[in-house]
Amino acid sequence: MPARTDVDRAGRPPHLRPGLVALVAAGGAVGTLARYGLNAALPGGDGGGWPVATTVENLVGALALGLLLGALGRGPESPRARAVRLALGTGVLGGFTTFSTLAVEVERSLAAGDGALGVAYGLVSVVVGVAAAALGLVVGGQVRRPTAVDVRRGPRATGGRGPGRHDGASS
Image (cartoon, rainbow, N blue to C red; front, side, top):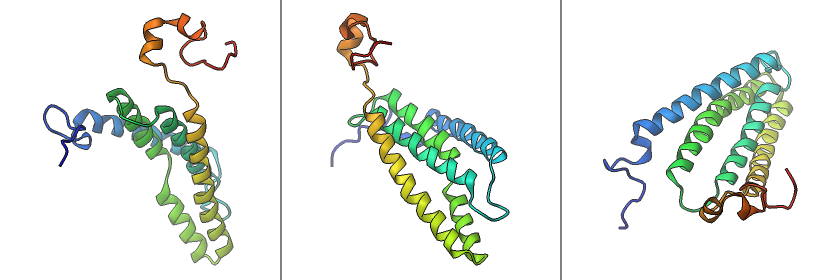
């Protein structure tokens, strides 16, 4: 059995490290507050009809998670990338999105006899959510992260465009 590479000096995996747990908790608080604010600003669906706020939360959250994960890239994860992924992805976006509210709203629509709304809402949320996440992965993957060589060489290594620009466009 290969040795685990994701344990810290104390032998703890990421989900048992107090600092990482705190990042997720803090991010979750921020995401939950953002969801609360959006719910206050948009129609929620509690009086019948399409649950606009939950739809926006979940679709924006799916796109944002795709963008984040695409930008962070694949392959071995640095400690900094792990912290960003946990704080923003698991924390903020986990608190912002809400599958449980989606499930309750679908059930309430079905129980109220509005099967078409319940089924359409559930299908649109899942299908468009997956498409939004996939789009985010593709777009986020286009973000060029500076390499160690770019960092050592400085702005001249990228033609003065900075580490994030590689398309020949001026800032």
